[in-house]
Image 1 (cartoon, rainbow over the protein chains, first blue to last red):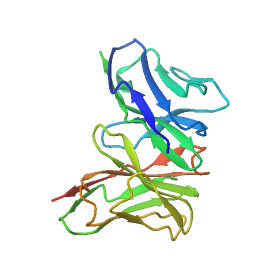
Image 2 (tube, rainbow over the protein chains, first blue to last red):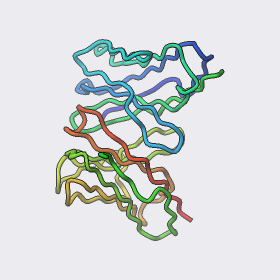
Image 3 (cartoon, rainbow over the protein chains, first blue to last red):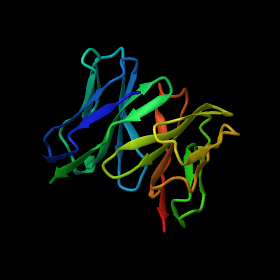
Image 4 (cartoon, rainbow over the protein chains, first blue to last red):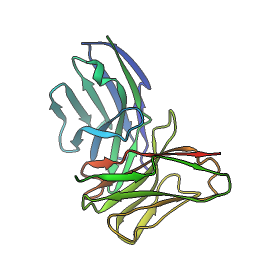
Length: 110
Length: 113
């Protein structure tokens, strides 16, 4: 089955700096890669996603890159703000099965 | 308002008892999922269903059971066979089963006392 690894597990950044989270996946058949943000006590919410036929996607301060050959994808958050503090999860989808990484706790220091 | 609703938000269970967690969606989604979340371990897939009256085991199905009698509903039963049931349980749904956005409920925190 699919195995998604996510690094780092925790990330502390100064407000205004960039944050980068990296994920690798094992199943070359995976074709959809969403990123979720989870705030304390709530369910995860999609923040950006990328499909296997695209190498990069950007939405305001958030961008995601995908390298299918190396089987890794990354989330980039620029100009971080205090409201970016949360747990972020990457995921890989193969057919109907959605597999998640272990999560990254991001703390933005004011 | 369309969405996915989990109930209850908090649930306490005595050891040896079965308990059922509710998940309802009015998004007309075909696929539904149950995940378990433990600190530092991310989301682990318990069961998923692509269509009514059909479901598949995920990575940690032992001690759990589900049913999918209606498109809108995907209840999860935590049985007494589950050795460590205390966790945060999340239900999700998606339109075409994986290749589109999955929407999550707000979760149910189950505590065994």
